[in-house]
Image (cartoon, rainbow, N blue to C red; front, side):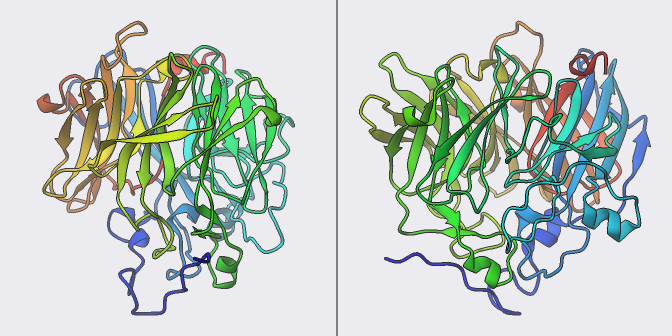
Length: 471
């Protein structure tokens, strides 16, 4: 079978018409930046939570063509709630001030270096809509595909584009992971015009310490990666660059490739590209990885949210098939890969106790999911026992990626707080919910009320104030 690309939809054709689903409902952008102090709280915020719950997502300021708009390409908007001593001091939402945003609003152009051009045909918005977190005492908004990060103030105002103090000259990732032992950020970067992936390590001072260029078959999208104690792990899957998508008017040049042979890469964390072991597997789309860990027999286990197929029938977003939870077993000695289905329940946006990243085996995972009545829900998986439990947000309410925060520095795995933004379509507002991860059935210990809807987006993090001390 030959490779195929989605056809450009025409007005009135398909489920996306007459309106793109990623421009309406829970995805619809908000127009205004607001600041609200002394937020109303129902319940009690745990006193040890001092810092900011940040998240970012697409918030297109002026979609050029709603028919071909892709959810991944919208301008970034950062949202934040600041907690201190049991109070919710403020909520802020701010556009990441890329050139399109500043031109549209008549704001001064954001300073900083220009990203290397990712190819003559690809129209790059040069925004950051995928992740927001801190490193080296700074707050950054990230995106992948060759776009520069943006540094933000504590109050989420855009300062400048950055290349990490002139230590970066390639691509960056939208989904880095922090090694629990060293504090370094690890990621795998790509661009649609590259035939290699770039393993990048950002040190605790916020400077690029290490890069490894790994040759690839094809030109995949590599959104996520994982760290075991021995390996950087990433996936070269069937969602591949197709320049013909650009000719059809899309600014997201990726589609399902039936001919591509997918494989997992095992790169020794301090190794070179010629030490990579490739483990071929059956086709599936993998955007998000819960985590990876080394097994006593030398294999590596990788828990992922996988889809049977994506970006074949719908070029506007990842909707073709629902995701499920799989565990891949990768053998660096033989290059063999086997897969075990852990759960068929649709689930995405996995998170774990990040104190285990690069250290050891995780037992628990936390996911965005759907209840049996199709309401949005928070799902907790116990991977040791093979059991799960969930908390349903209620009709017309949409939860986002939940972040796990340990109750104390030395508390056990799963002894902590799950924090997430929830949007209420009927009321046009939102909440931050805080639940104890060992008592989902007890419901939120605190609801922080936000007088504006927060669109469904991508990733976020809890940034404790101690991460920014001295800055």
